Image 1 (cartoon, rainbow, N blue to C red):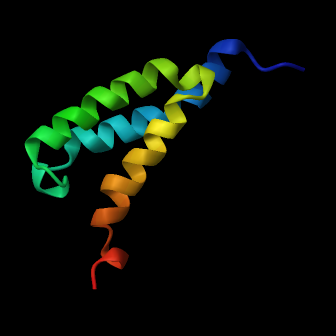
Image 2 (cartoon, helix red, strand yellow; image 1 turned 180 degrees about the vertical axis):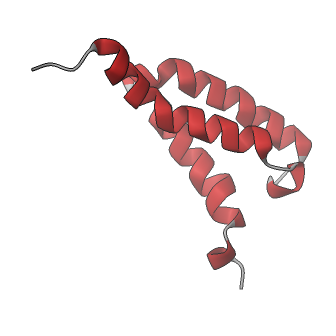
Length: 78
């Protein structure tokens, strides 16, 4: 049995949308260049939302993870 296409599309888009929401809610001081870097990441994550169905958007999300999320994790400070 094949799952419905809208459900598959939602499953593909979910991680990208969560990264976009994370970026939207992070303060500018979590980004290397401040507010300008945050604005750039928001634009790139919007591109990722569009390109996630062809799996290109996941590369952008991985870049966001390593550049912003991992950089600000408690384990990386020390």
